[in-house]
Image (cartoon, rainbow, N blue to C red; front, side):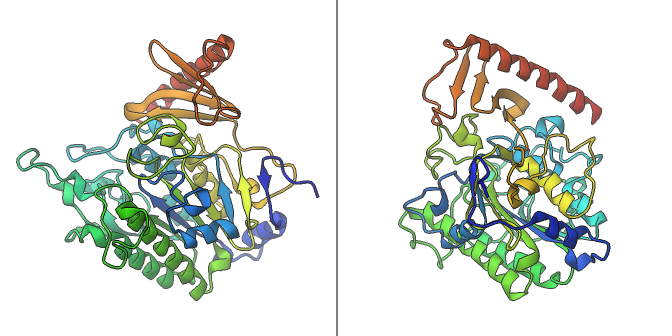
Length: 438
């Protein structure tokens, strides 16, 4: 059997048989897969052993990669927080939604009520849903997670004590808001958050082991302010940042162990990824250029691992272009739900790619780079990437120059023109779809 171009596989599972289990005439709710998305904050591409780190000990996440698939061309929706979280839950670029820049204390906006979010879609299919951790998609009651499809929420709508304003700067005190459901509770110690989120996630898994569920575990770390509990402080060779990452690795191991202890590992899909690249001086985006806030690969390309025993081949390396927007249609398909096409416009179903057939088409050949305030900064088509500002263009061949060190714009003006035209076309489309939600 010839290997699939662009990836390596240690073994293969017949996807047709699996689909019969999920969608067959005698399928029950128990037969459906559970879904867990573990989302970290500001974690760089190379901040895991399985993605190249030599100084960070991440044995649990590395085991996920050995037993599942590494997605090496996986993109956040933007090099910043809120847009990527919006894209995860809606399957489209956040510029369509008016959520193209991070929300802060004075903001009153959030996910539009007209959208059918991924958890809402899954609720309609009989799933229990929970969000634990950072939300950052609206911190007023009408925008809380419980208003957008989550049965359970425990976490912070804004994300960090770092957001607390100086005394007298704002009358609003949402910066230290922490919720249990819709009710405000005391903000826990920052150093304890990863362990507390983990305990809440495991409680949800145990309580819902006999029915299908969707869990979004959205860590506040390794976004600053960095902090580690006594269990992890000073233990890493990579300083405080390493302590924080190794605590996240411990958390991931506890989640996987909970699935095994509750005998549901074989019917659970776990995705591990980050919302954008690392802040300068915190973590590593190697081998890519750039960091958080920038449209270079280091700001947007993030580590991603997909784990599903008996469904995703162990040791897979998937090199096709994939994005966090693709999780919406992928999980919706596995739950037997049709995605609402009017909203989830940009995501692609990844399951055929993840579960392996010999001649599967890549789900996409194109990705658009957005930065703050919905600015369309660039486009990638296959190996070629164009970044455009008012008076200059940067053209890179990511196949021969993955570190974006050689600007080819002057050498290949026809490629610049073609990609620039595609950016203009997409910008017009975005403006139309954004107007539809107003």
